[in-house]
Image 1 (cartoon, rainbow, N blue to C red):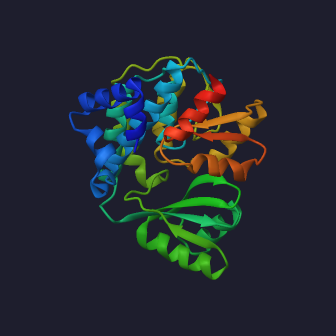
Image 2: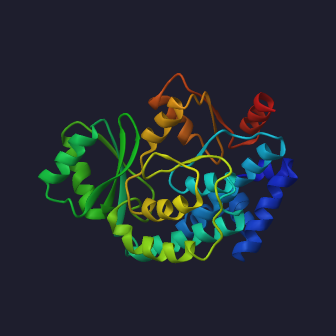
Length: 292
């Protein structure tokens, strides 16, 4: 991922070189060549996605494009903070690798899971969790869009919930992740992450950033650290975040990073919103043509 963009734009290539230097690993090779199994390890996946996202952003930035707001889904909040100049890229990529390590340390490998629950409302999911008496093992993690909520927790309990929910007509999809993000089981990771965040320079965001945990706009550097610490173990409010930006009269959303997940979510939140997925050569060129 990101290979075609790095081939076309020197500012994008520079991002991967900065990432390799900051981490002391050949992240560029992993992104461009794999192997997929190694790239899929969370300690590699998180910095890789950040690097690709920032590489695309640097191309847009070089073209003179400046957004009115920035927002990022989960890990993407670090990309948003880099775009807003609240974090340097080198600090951010070191942080997200540490973040991944801390998350992996918080739970034994294979003992956690996440699943997308398609159909039921938040209230119905909470009611089912309570009826199963697994409130301390399964949690709502992501409020992504109407009809799509992600749960997170201990693997056996998540699988039991999926079976019950599917019996009641829901569709459940187990996600290919190794740690249960955005739930209290990650509190130990948040404590370690806070120590790391206190060691880096955090600036006032140059553009407003919408946070995951509160779905609110922040403009002060003092708001950045607590938001990132809470994010790792607190429900992610993506639908509310997008609705907030729509209320702020945002008409065009440009998704930077691999894939089209966020653009697809936004269509379910509000079909009238325009989106561009700039995660590959064609999408980036579309964004440059429209916005330059």
